Length: 241
Image 1 (cartoon, rainbow, N blue to C red):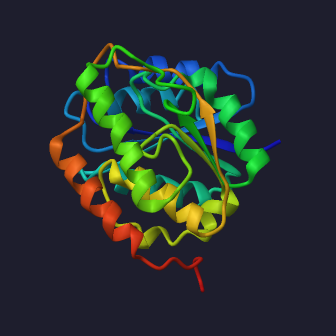
Image 2 (image 1 turned 30 degrees about the vertical axis):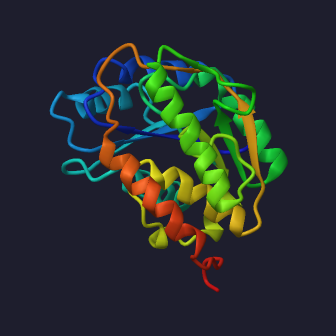
């Protein structure tokens, strides 16, 4: 059986973390979870560590000091997952904006394409619930901008609900990934694409969080805007080459 791990970065997610963990563990297919907590002052890490006693083989946590950025959290998680022998590595938010029931569909698509499967909000129209219209338009046209600049045929370039094959992550020099905010999502997809891996899109419905607060900021979008232009002119090589 494929070994699968879901990486969940957290910062102040005490309202959501127990429910999301229990939901993932209720799915068929033996999913494991790695929580990367950036020093949440609300006690998120304590909740996870308490639950790890209930799920000692399946629930893991890495605690970091302070907010160090979404990208660095995932890079830490990717390296840990490769070291621990996982075949498929997922990215997922803690706040139920990504439906855990879609994990098996992402796994199936990733196993079929051999590269990256993206839970896409825009490959089948616009599938976003409870977002302000301004944020929907900003996100939708950000993906249009990325497609135009990079020529990557992906509808949801900023999506953060994904599944990577082990082979794909092993080919990427994770230490060379430069963007730390949501631009990280673009950079990872484009790097996989430039290294010859397929990027499959699986239509999902994205639902805005009900509990906790969003971590989005204008600085995150600024990094992504200029970072995409730099990506267009970067050369890509498989790790070790």
